[in-house]
Image: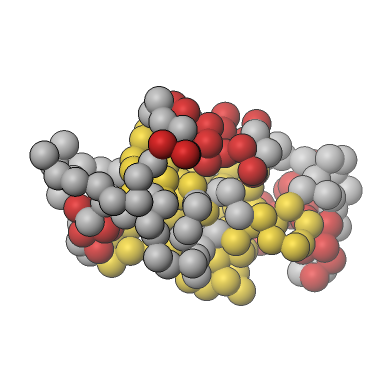
Amino acid sequence: MDTVSSNLTHHFLIAMPHMADPHFARTLTYIAEHNEQGALGIIVNRPIDMTLGTLFERVDLQLDALGFTSQPVYFGGPVQTDRGFVLHRPSGEWHSTLRVNDEIGLTSSRDILQAIGNTGEPHEILVSLGFAAWTAGQLEQELADNAWLTIPADMSIVFALPPEERLSAALHKLGIDLTQLSVVAGHA
């Protein structure tokens, strides 16, 4: 596979065991955008010590919809950790949404939180503080350095599984067990 010309939008990045950056060690990252300018993603398996109920209180919004209060907020990545991002299905129509495809959106505007609080829609959400970003060519170089495995995204992993099961579920789709991954990799 020619990683330079590959578009990894709507793919998962699976951190290899030797990932030195503590922000990304043992992470599963959803890539929402990948183009010649770089890439943007959200780590989907690292909940922080905050619930949606607490987040809504902090931003002075009502959370009347049932089932959301105890959902965790996630560490989405080391960039703009003071800003909230909502990965959601369906993509909908919000003020500031990066439409990944017809099904998935990544929104950073307050209107989506208001809708979630009032109506519970969109129902399939992952709320993060921060995101992950790569400059032009950076992700391609990390792939060449064997820092990541990639696989087309399966959103049921994000929206239907608990966070502690997401990394192994993505690896399972590749036919790999986490214990089988070597710290070193070679090129053929």
